[in-house]
Image 1 (tube, rainbow, N blue to C red):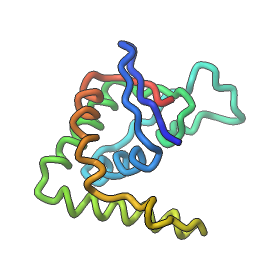
Image 2 (tube, rainbow, N blue to C red):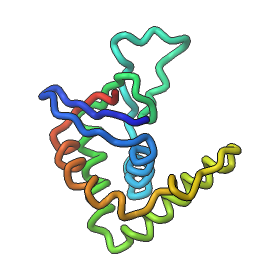
Image 3 (cartoon, rainbow, N blue to C red):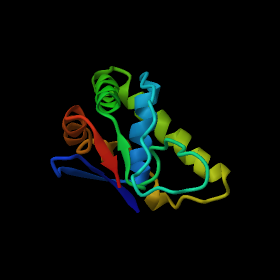
Length: 134
C-alpha cells in the first residue's frame, strides 16, 4: 500500500506508506511544523477533518506547507546528522508498529539505503508547491 502525491500539473510521486511516514517524521525531526491538510472535496465524514498527512484520502497540502516540508527535508539531507537521524526515525517508527502488537518480518524492515533515490525527486516535487495525497 502507498500514497501518491499529485500536483495540479499532473506530476505524481509514489511512495510506500512506510517511506512516507519516515519522510514526515524526519522533516518534523528537523523542525517542520505541519500546518495540516485541507479535507478532500468529497469528504463527508463524521466530525471535523483531522488534517492528516498519513492517509491517502485526497487531502490537499497548501503551497507554503509543501515548501516548508521541502526546506526541512533538504535541511535533513544536507545535515551531518542525516544518517543518524534517518536510522533513529526508522527505528522509532518500527518500534511503534511492534508496540501495537504487529511483527515486522526482517525482509520488511526499512534500510536507510532505500531512501537514496527518494529524496531528490521528492524535494523537487515539494518545492513546486501544493499537492494532493491520494
